[in-house]
Length: 138
Image (tube, rainbow, N blue to C red; front, side, top):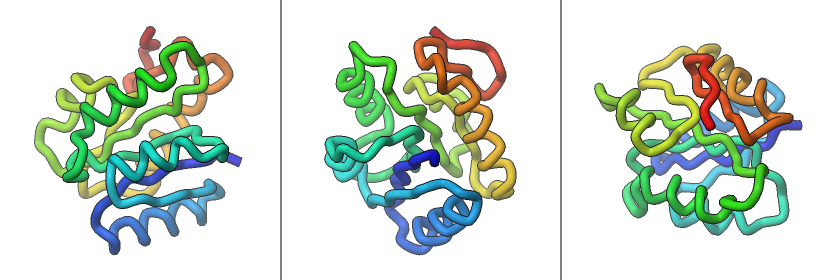
């Protein structure tokens, strides 16, 4: 089973997205902030994907990804990071912070699932994670 850590500060969106992902067979843990997500990553439960709202408020997405990279610096077990945002500049912002994939709001649920599955297609070898364009990143 794929484990997703959902970081979304709007409760209604968080509940709806968690339900959508669970209905598609994912195991979802939800938190409302970047700081809470870092604490959740200390839990021994696995985390394959962090689905991160670009604007969580307490910790910028860039700072979150930096902390994640530092935490998993010597490990190939770093979760994939997907960014969800309504920003018109989501692609450039997501690339800049090192996200593995991104999706703009509003989006079709099937498109989000497709992007998660595409990122996970590289899961056996996380040393070279694909971005959503299909090009391998080092």
